[in-house]
Length: 264
Image (cartoon, rainbow, N blue to C red; front, side):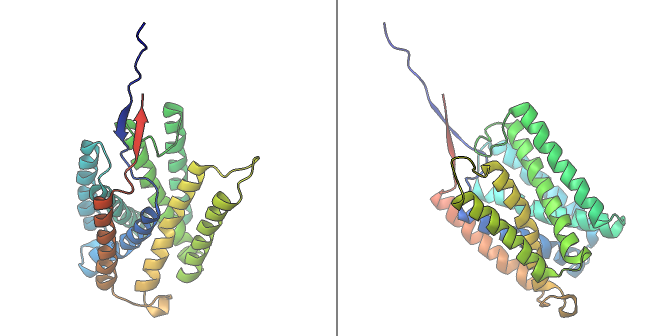
């Protein structure tokens, strides 16, 4: 009797593998999210509302393209992430400055929203892994989680640095220290009885890199009397953007962050 043949299909994950390049671009992108939002709404006098409409429209278009691609393409993916960073900076600022909602309240709202996204996805998919984003449904949950992590990171970062008056440098050091602590525990304190959950570690660091980048952006661009260096957003934004473009071009060529999943 002829043995049954097992067929394996290679499927491209719709999101990138986590590499050092991922975290560098993420931090640069979150910094641009802070500086670009200020540049567009303040320097170009578009205002928070008009800038939110424009950037929100662009984000919708890029995400539509992302879902149509059904695979990870570095350029489109990172454009979406940067636009999310800009849009949620604008939305958070509008909620606080335009509607008078406190940073404590916005932080709680976004925390609950993120928790609900994770709970609903786990109940429906039985996994929170980012290494098996192979369907439109899983990708939708992934981007919803990204949206809420940026929102939570923005609100929480502003709460710590501005609401509690800690300052941009001190807040940045706190966030950097928290990220370093998670990395050290995950990589160097593994035992037979304890290993820090990889999914928990990833999403925790993903949330923390948002306020880290925002604190860096605020420190570079805010006036000296407000605790910053007073560098114009017109300078910081393109400099960081060039860095991102360079790394994305490298990833587009080398494809070191393209994750292939094998399905039977």
